[in-house]
Image (cartoon, rainbow over the protein chains, first blue to last red):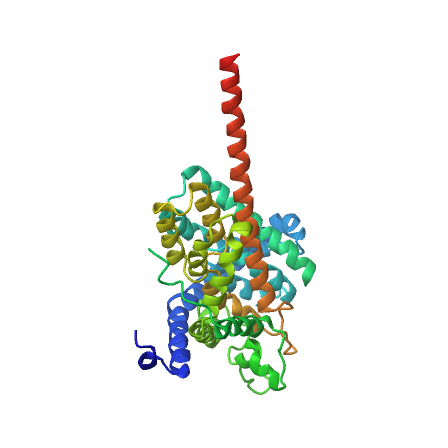
Length: 154
Length: 229
């Protein structure tokens, strides 16, 4: 490998990275966030969001969050980007504050996209079926521990 | 997949790149003074405001259309974050992390140091991480129990860096009505908490497996004892 000849300019590297970011934004971020906003709209006009808020209020209160935050975590299991969209939608409507978002941010990823990743990680490595529910459980536990920690820190 | 070809020396430059990466996303140097040059949020900047009407997204929207316009405001943050990660990677920040990790993987996760490449890969791509892990298992470089522990690490917070910087980072661009940043934690704090919890989760798996193996061992022993008795 002739390194000297192949060394790219730092500006080229930056632009290549920005292009990757554009592709992620267009193929993942925008569609996921849009879907999340449609779901929120549905939850709001049917009154389901209020119900989620009431049902989950006692559990979420343990980590300093209102019950509506449960909607973010449910979305997270399907899609991390979607959950961020839900979180922002709830922030806009006043159901969540900036502090709540800080508590939720690590948790969204710790239990994020696990439905999808069950195939893409556990399936590829060949994890035994019996251990899969345990791994789901640990992800959710991880998320709750992270919210507990963030609640103390913010 | 052999990783000995990738075992090239980590230079001082790589370590500086890693240090820079940590400072850059930590929020420590967030400022409008010159040192703001070394802070992600500062350089990411802000959208302009239209008179007193706020940003171009406006307010009171909802549904798919509002979702699209909001998602559109996220694009520059995603592009900038991915561009910076590409530059930091170019300067070997992740190589330095891989080298440093290879010394601590055995005590921290109970997996051999040669898993460091898979670990670093898994922070960026779940598919790369899981396929390299499968390779390590097939080649007998890690045991079944080690692979379960390591898989747990990858499963919670999969592709943490790319996923977080391509969506979560945008939470930090939200502002309160008065224009002050809404989220009260830094990107760096969130990344640190996620990474620590990934390790905690993997260790729950690690010690759970050890415990159940011991219990199984006891059962076998007591059965053997009963048979003998």
